[in-house]
Length: 118
Image 1: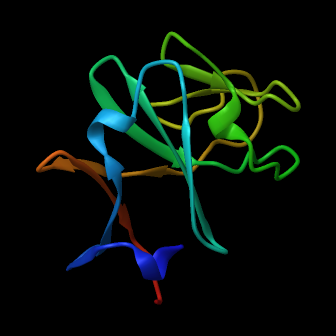
Image 2: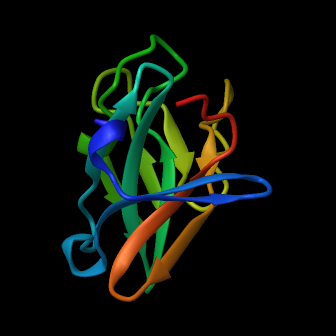
Image 3: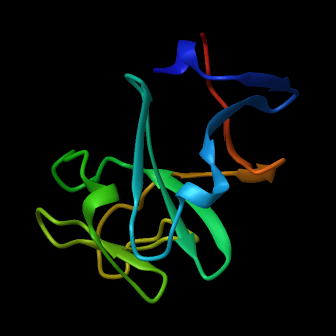
């Protein structure tokens, strides 16, 4: 949960540390439920780490992290909507995934949460 994670404040929101960079590997997602509104999935696309909402906008299933990853996209394992991991854009038609800014610092992955109240 969010209260257990290191944070640092910024003018544009709060940076939250999620995990070590080495834990994010190609073709597999990692899931972090920070609070009720911030359920995040991390993926490695090429050498970059990206963060998107873990909740598919189709039927609100929180399983994006467990989707099929291929060529910079992830396919929801429940209803098969496909999303570009760098942009969050739906590859077909439908709603997009929310994306988060990611920073790798001192071997850790940090994401920027813009509307954090905690």
